[in-house]
Image (cartoon, rainbow, N blue to C red; front, side):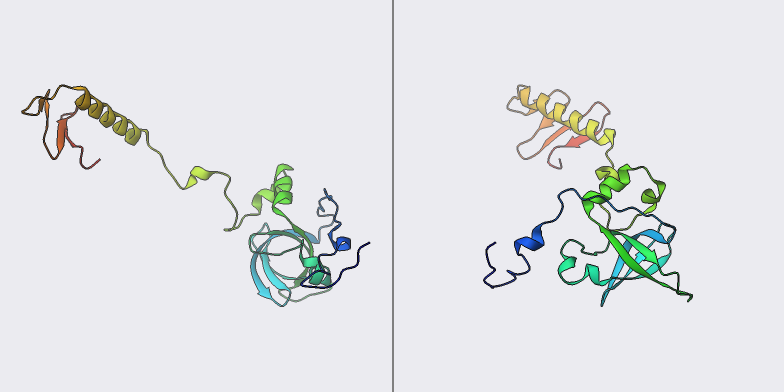
Length: 192
């Protein structure tokens, strides 16, 4: 094996640290004390807040496994899914929870496909929506009106315009075009 000669972060990126399983098995909850949660806020110092499927806010502690060299593949960020373990030995009003697993975006999609109702409850404001048309509403009326005006413009262009500018029921002036459509409304083509 080639020796690492030093330099900026070369030891961190050595070959022995890059050998990770290609398709690792996803860790699922095995006990009642293991809870799925969505990260809501990073507090620093190895702590963060997460919401469980019931909407309760949990104070979570990152163990040593998820710090230092191990944090490269286990980045905890708002909107990320995690598996946390409840500390059964604590009896305070707001007990701490230990971080057990961090799920990547790819693993999130696999968990959603399992069909478990717990994963459908895990939502946050950082999630990417699957439906892109939620923010936009398209009306056929606007589309039909635009097509109707395009047809009217095509009729004006095809019509033989005399020197006085008279065309059918509308007129074409030097600076503006005005025509009366089928509904009897005047259409000003400078505004379109």
